Length: 286
Image 1 (cartoon, rainbow, N blue to C red):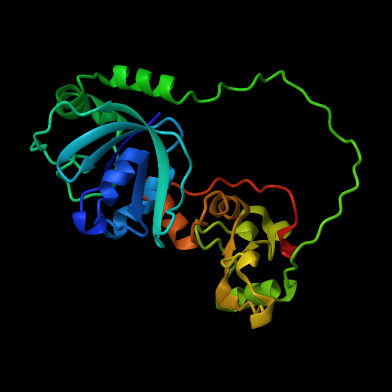
Image 2 (cartoon, rainbow, N blue to C red):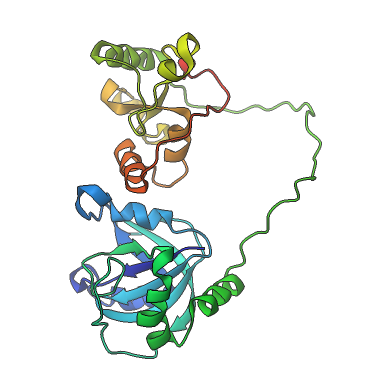
């Protein structure tokens, strides 16, 4: 379980009673992208990272409003292009209405940030400055409320087993990709140097030798469902991003998809590279 701060602070973005309606409907939202310098990346990426059952302290600028528990996944905000939203369960309402005026941490209500994680080493500071004065809760008490409000599925039994292998005839229609543009994109990248993942920099040939030569996956930035055959349905090299198998899987896990730039920013912010493992399948054909 992680703890986050989210601000619905700038009233110019919430005119016409919108902020009150979001409060009533228990919806958290953020504009995409919401930036915090180049080192920290996009705060809309932070918003995407909020997990099921995580605690979120909702504020209106420096005014602490509600303690929330994330209960739904990220989705495009209905009727507001360029915004993201997610549902939550209300855990507690602030009993103190005085604006927060304490020390300015990145996650503090008076900080110039929209969505920020509270690092675990600072949870006791959060308890002293926010949880106790505004909600009369300890960190442990808040986490207990979150677990009751949004139960997270228990770990699966490692001894569990299922039957597989039954044959089944399946018929369906699918939109086709043209593999020639993938080959052209890879050839173009090789002309400029080597095939490296645009998000994490992973190089298959450097890691695996000749077996990894010219091995990379091509991510189509535009979903096929958005390609209209009546307008030509053309895909250019610039419409592709060359990614390792792990990063390719990751960009498809959110809706809308993450861009290679956003994933790269996220990896940089967390100080990590993608692990050197490759899901099955020959990506030369993708």
